[in-house]
Length: 234
Ligand SMILES: Nc1ncnc2c1ncn2[C@@H]1O[C@H](COP(=O)(O)OP(=O)(O)OP(=O)(O)O)[C@@H](O)[C@H]1O
Image 1 (cartoon, rainbow, N blue to C red):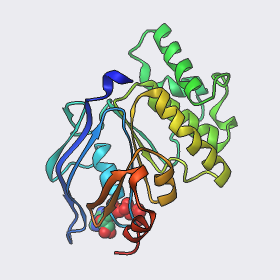
Image 2: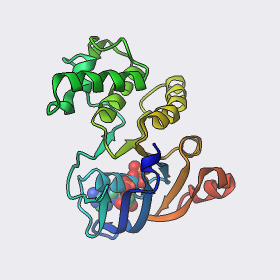
Image 3: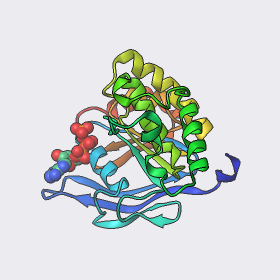
Image 4: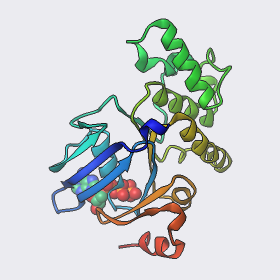
């Protein structure tokens, strides 16, 4: 969406989080433009989970600031939604019930429209009244995506959202994710330990290593050999 183009969606300014023994992250400076699709990748122990927990508001930076859409994040934030590895859906609710979960403040009409639009975005139109326990793993992850998008966040944080799926479903959903992103016009930050996935998805790639940005580049300009080296054991 063009009106998003020159706004900053996410800013990390000097963000640091160190565990005892000094492992952790920092100090990180990252800016993500509104509407951008950024993949963050890194070897085991590079700080991905720590960064995710900071972005989701589950951890507080020990120094520095995280801002989303101009607001400082100091806890879970409605402008930022998280899609996790295992979709945390309510099994006793319908698909529509799950997608409508964060929309209780809207009128019924508006809510229905949001749910319909979100389900269309993830190619689940026609599934509204199905129970979640009747769905495949891939379909459940689609519901989880639809629920996250229905609240119209500034930023969607994706934590290895396809890692629990079989290879074919994973490949299919990865292909579709770019299209979903284009249509939704929302900033995507996709965190993974799979280099191929990070290269396939998104416009920009950041490699974390030992809690720091080791590389930050447009995906089309990355050098695979260099990435592979950076993904090796520290
Ligand atoms: N609760 C903790 N206490 C102490 N050290 C921790 C804690 N959690 C993580 N660490 C350390 O901080 C560093 C970053 O860990 P983190 O889990 O963020 O990495 P990661 O990139 O998510 O790794 P993986 O891909 O294996 O999940 C590692 O050196 C890890 O051992």
